[in-house]
Length: 185
Image (cartoon, rainbow, N blue to C red):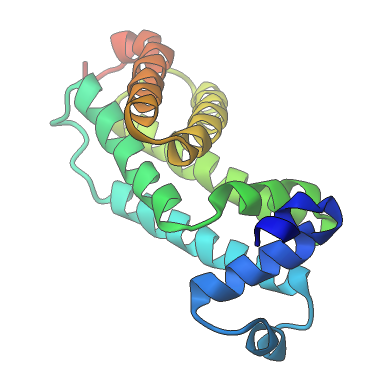
C-alpha cells in the first residue's frame, strides 16, 4: 500500500483496498456486491447517515431541562463524536459526499437532518429565539461541530483531546447568548 499511496494515480485503488480490508473481504468480493467505487461509497454514506439519525433519535429522548449548559454541550458533542469515531475513513467519506455528484444528495440530507433535529433539541432545551433563529443556530452548530469532529477523529493523543475541549468551549460560546434568554434558564 505504500507504493500505491506514493503514486497519485492509484488513490482509487488504495481506497478500494482499504475498504475491502476494513470489511475483511477481498477487492474482488467487494466488486461482486457493488458495481463501482461510487456505489460502495454511497452504501457507506447511507449507513453513516443511519448512524447519525440514530444518535439524533437518542438525543430526542434525553431529559434536557435537567442539564447545565456545559453538560448539554458535552453530551451533544460526545454523542456525535461516537458516531464519527465508529466510521472508519470518515474524512474520506465526507469529502466524497461533498465532492462526488452521485453522493451530494446524501451530504445535503445529512445537513438537513442535523439542522432539523438540533433545532428541535435547542427549543426543547429552552434556548431563546424564533424557530428561524434556532434553525440558523442549528446550521452554525452543524458547520462548527462537523468540521472540528473530523479534525478530532483524525488527530491523536493530546492534540485530539485539546481540539475536542476547544470545540466544546466554542460551542458553549455559540449557544450562551441564547441560553441567557431562554425560558428554562
